[in-house]
Image (tube, rainbow, N blue to C red; front, side, top):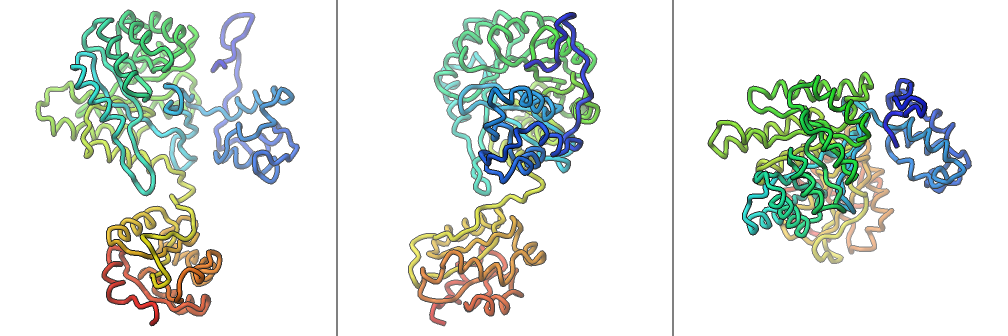
Length: 488
């Protein structure tokens, strides 16, 4: 589907109404175009409820099966246009590992949830010895970190042509394809070399880097022939970037990614200003030529005069963090050190959570170790960071116990107590709902030290004896050794 409707008579972009922002779209606007049959196939009570959640970004249009039928084809097309984000979504890669970048609706995160977390790609080049190349590919694929129950990992591989030789580049691409299923970014400015690389990964739908002022037409032909998205590169020259984008789009390449240039150190302020300007034009002024995903390349700091690797890694980490904060939809990095990458992954995770919903876990009853009828029962809230911290401390202490997780809307203990989401009634209801009494031969419950003021009311509401535990879960092991006695 074309980004701009084309007038069949003139072949030129047709007149188009000003796009609405997501904040201007009413659920009524969406409801008018839905089937309005209240079939509940979307698992909502009615079409109006579905339209509200659709506008809020909590469901997607594909969750409504009837709208996908031929009967509602015209309405479906209108809904796609109505709900289209100001920043186009572009996908590269294939299968379950494919990544989608862009698809942003707003400038500021608090206005609406950011979608499609920025993938982090790691580079390698075609002059690497084969074993070194394969080892790096393996390290990229295996790099992961568990953060409050979520697995954070790297997302793509950028293959650079350092040899300037088509056959060498093709061979490197073949080796990477055989060793990894991660999405690829092919980096070469010579169209002949790029075509050799593309021929080695036809089914992978790689991202092509890059079309420039001198090679744009040949790169556009390759993007159309291989049906791959294309990066438009004009470092620090925003007028040229805009001109190239317009030319390529009118040429027929719809899936574009913009590279406004990444300059570290003294040039970082200019870099951030350019990224911010492009995203502001897209989301605030609905400028279509700015409405494409943005590529940040923190690894450019390695091309400077600095010779200390530790300093270069530090500069790359700083540049990556700034780009994530200022609208980069995709990063290409070089360093594989955990202290460089993990801060970016955790920061990305935090940016792309829904600001309207605290990060939470499912409420319920969890068993740790091999609890028996004399084992202690603890209670906490369902704030993810609280739960995973307690889980880690319980496992580190090798405790056999039960942990009751009360639904507090994802709030931490202190906040939930202050907001009365974690109270005597919620504790009593949790004990009853999960039938905790049937699992143990006692009625003693350990509550968090930060919820000490609930002890009296909780005893009265639940009929259980309440022990006030430590304020920090790291003290659980010592507390249970000294204070736990199921018969007391």
